Image 1 (spheres, rainbow, N blue to C red):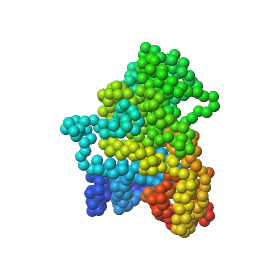
Image 2: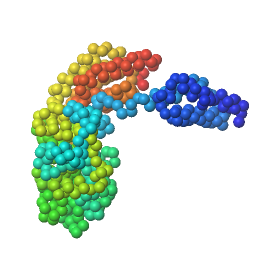
Image 3: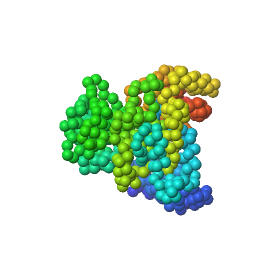
Image 4: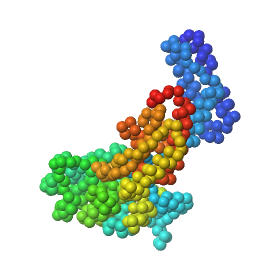
Length: 484
Ligand SMILES: *Cc1c(COP(=O)(O)O)cnc(C)c1O
């Protein structure tokens, strides 16, 4: 080891000295002592390694910080622990049920109920009339049945859990028949074949990717058949030479053979979207009317509520599902239940549901109203006299997202932001780093704000966010006209 390296190692900040500084600044009120000490050690250890590596490479340019600088570094790290990781963002992407951005925003009543129910105690599992233990899902059973004419209802953590639970209850050790065209993968590692395997049911694929016929199902039925499953192909469509078997035909087959039929509907829409100019999407009511024995769907897709898995269907089947011990591991929590009950109440009046459930509102809002909002935002932004940005309008399409209506083009109006110095991707990155991040759409080297998912109450935030970027860029700017 050469002498310079030795000397450098001797000048490394001492852990005790760093801790002394931190102690004076009351850092130990802000994080556990062990964590602070460990962080100190790790930082000093890293410096030691850097010096040794530099020594090996005869590189004498490594920089050893002072004790104060080292303490500062640790302070920043501790302060980082106090900032929230899970934060609200502005969804300017135009993807209404963006799974990565939390899917459906909740209606006001759901928010109020979450606060009311979780602030104190509740009758979560307490039957008030009998004064004894009750079931948590009973709180939504009646309303779900009233809205859909289902015989019985229960709810679990999410739709993936609902599918797993029903498969396990009805078809463990038995075969479940599914069309090859419906063996889907949706985002986040939910794959029908894999969920099937974990449920203990045996996948019996029938038909081909593009065409499956009723006789394919008929031929597959045997001694060990537990269930016929139809899966909504949520996030994709196959076009061209295709055929699948209507739910009603599968129901008939089920009735003739005594095998239950399940429908994983994915999104679980209650509203007839056809009346709003969309292509026909099977509603939950349609599936039940067709006579399906059990149907499952998500709470936070087109339904517009909290993350949940809803199971509706025949009473005798639901009773078995409720008794399955797996249920205990998949159960819904009280915050979700409070929000779900409030969301379902909105549907007692469809008109009210469309206006109070934000996802449905965004989906069905006429493009003329979106355009009006775009003009408002643009004139507000123009009034802020940016050095950096100019704005223009664009027509385009929003998307439902959340694996719903994948081929549906929803007309929208976007505000395009042109920046003097920043490329689209670096402006996009700066928008993501704001205190309240703005997640924009970037398309063809252009940053776009889709007004279909932006609320007027967010205009101020957007203005302030852009202003702070405007100031930052024009302060740091030494690069002339070059975009970086
Ligand atoms: C979205 C979806 C699921 C999973 O639902 P989560 O609520 O996200 O767990 C399962 N099946 C289908 C068909 C879906 O579209």
